[in-house]
Length: 162
Image 1 (cartoon, one colour):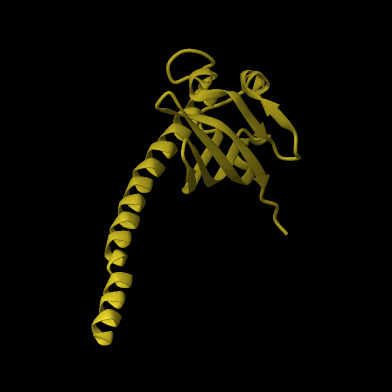
Image 2 (cartoon, rainbow, N blue to C red):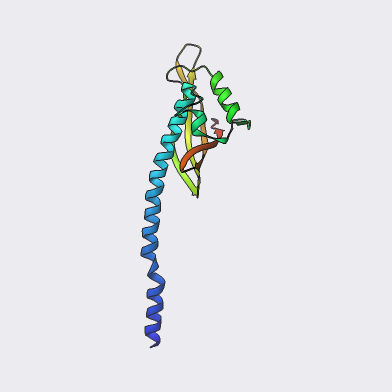
């Protein structure tokens, strides 16, 4: 009888493991889809910045939350309107701007998602050649509002060569 109880206890302890493994697998698959969706949103954001699109579909005004903020290199914090003003003043040529890659969804907390990426900023040098001006590691913040993911902000940390 004692052996039977021990056997039942062992089976009960290990029974949930396959169910948990399936749940984790589903969560990873869901996160992969969300990661792809959020990276696409980030690329739309970069295009809106380049195109200086402030309002309407696919614009900074639509893609960003009202509480949007960026922590720029050097620690300066700008809100949505200040960031749109900065983007409006920036003179962009084809092939210049922000180019994110290595996008990785790091965490999802209900309607909040945090991701990181490596972003290269390209500009034009004195000879008119497109060059890398700055590289940054970036924390991207997203919030789901009314069933739709929006950009809540970013923290940009410059990569300095040593």
